[in-house]
Image (cartoon, rainbow, N blue to C red; front, side, top):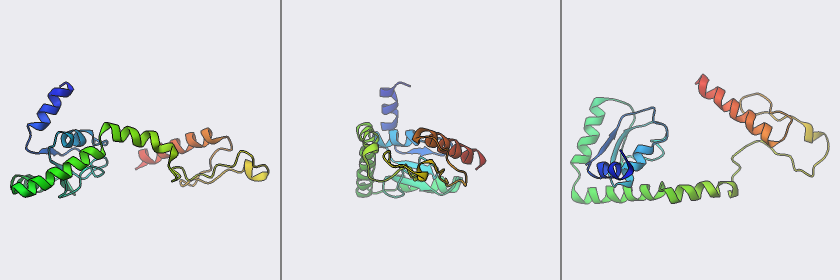
Length: 166
């Protein structure tokens, strides 16, 4: 389906039911909401960041038929006022995850004050034995003694290993 057909399909739905636990980015959920469609979905990574139970759809704690039927019936049974409020929540979520807003968040990320990487990066002007010290990471291993790039690569490999082991 091309984009206009997909948007039209979402707009034609009364509710978008999403049972996947493997679609980890939640893209289809944000697409449905961008079309103004409420979502009923299973709590999973990517989905839980988007679906706010009762505000823009229903977020189910586990996969089970009865839970889905109940959540779909909840959406179908909403009064016009409740449906309007749900629509407002969907609109806020669609705006929050819109392409321009997401792009702005990504472009702004390097300028944020929070430190996304808990590694201590030595001051380039600092000299002495601390410059050559390896730093412990949260996986119990030590970061390489190289520059920031080496540490970032090590951190990514460590994160990948933890994902595979989980």
